[in-house]
Length: 118
Image (tube, rainbow, N blue to C red):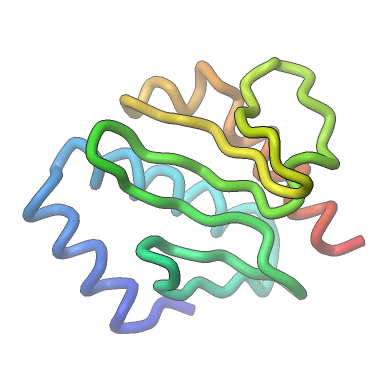
């Protein structure tokens, strides 16, 4: 379900950072297609996605966009793209839309969703 706050966030991002808007829009499509009953909300300065529990978020920074994986430390990093050293989270930095395929984002989103549903 898309709320007005998400649409307003996307509109503002498109106006201010068209390059980041393209990345965030594609990430959002991938996450929303990862299974049924995914909700999204604007939180912590980005878009947070939840199934039964929050499992990932998309955030735009000055020089890149990140896909934050809530339980990323528990995921197998078969492609060696997960960044971070915290107890729980990992993230993937994206600088262009092509990075989404190059860094196997769909694979990691599916794993994050499965972990959240377990």
